[in-house]
Length: 388
Image (tube, rainbow, N blue to C red; front, side, top):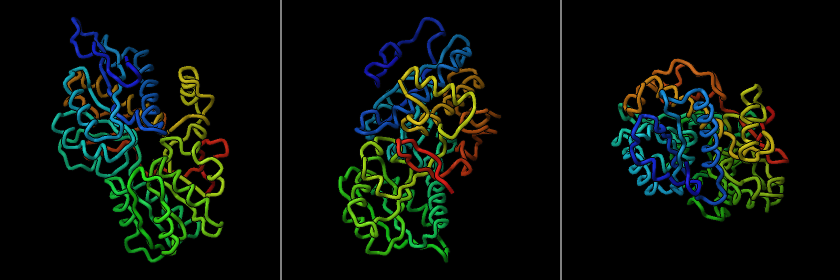
C-alpha cells in the first residue's frame, strides 16, 4: 500500500483486468517536516476509517477504499507536482491535504483546473473554502481561522484582558488570521489590538517580536504559529521575569507536532492555552473507545491522553467516512459526480458530531463554531479542555 511510509506503489498506476481494483484516497501532506506529527495523525485517522469502510463492503461493489500517501514536505511546488501526478490515476477519487494553509492556498487554482475533489482535515485559512470557484472542489472538516480568532478573543475578554497583541507568520495563514481578528475587533470599545508583530516561518528566535509586544503594552499574546515557533516563543517568554511573561492564547498549529516535548520545563512557566475542536480525552462512547483501542493495537498509542495531533486523527476519520458515502451515492469514481454527491449527503453520525447536510452547494465547511473550545496542556502532555 505505502512504500517507505509515503510513496505510492507503482502497481496502482496500472489498470486491472476487472473492476475490483481499489478506490484510492491519496493524502498529500508534510510527512517529512521535522518535529511534525500532523500528517501521520491524518493518515492514521483515514486508515482507521478505511478499515471500517472495507469491513462493511467497501465503497463500491467489490472495490475497497485504499489510503496512499505522498510527502510534500510543506512545499507548495512539491504539492503541485504530487497533485498533478495523482490526477493521472483514474482510481484516485480524491486527495486529502495536510496541516499547512499556505500549501493548500496555492493549490486552489490547480485543484479546480484538474477537477479533483480535495478534502481538508486541518488547514484553517478561511479562503480555502471561500475560494470563489464554482463548482467548488474543496471540502473541509476542520477549524476556520475566523472561528479560532473569535474563540481566542472571547477567552481573552473573559479573563479580563483588554489590550491584545498578535504574533503571526509572514504568509497566507498569517494574513488570514489578521483579517479575521481585525474583523472581530472592528468597532469594539472594550478590546484593542495594540501590537501586531510578524515573523518568518522557521526562524528560531522571536526576541525582537516579543520585546515589541511588551513595549506596546500588550496584556495577552495571541499566537498564530506551528510547533517550532511555539517552542521558540515559550523559550523566550520563560526567560523573562514573571511580571513580563505574557499569557499566550494560541491557534492550534502548535498541536501538530512535538511542541510539548520540546518546550520541557519552560512550558511550566508560561500561561499557555490553545484552540481545539475535539478531544479524545473528554469524548465518550463506544466509537471513541474502539478508535483508541485500534490506535493502541496498530501504532502502540498507550491511551487517549497519548494521541499525537488528536484533531488530525478525528477530522480525517470523519472526512474519510463522508467521502465513502459520496462515492457510494455517486455510484462511480467519476470525480465530478463524487464532488456533487459530497454536497448532497443527508446525514452522518460521526465521531466529532452528527452531521446533517455536512456540505451544501453554498457551504463547504462541515464543522461550525460550536465545536471550537479552548484547551491546555496537562502535566503529562495531554491536550484537555480548559476550565471556564
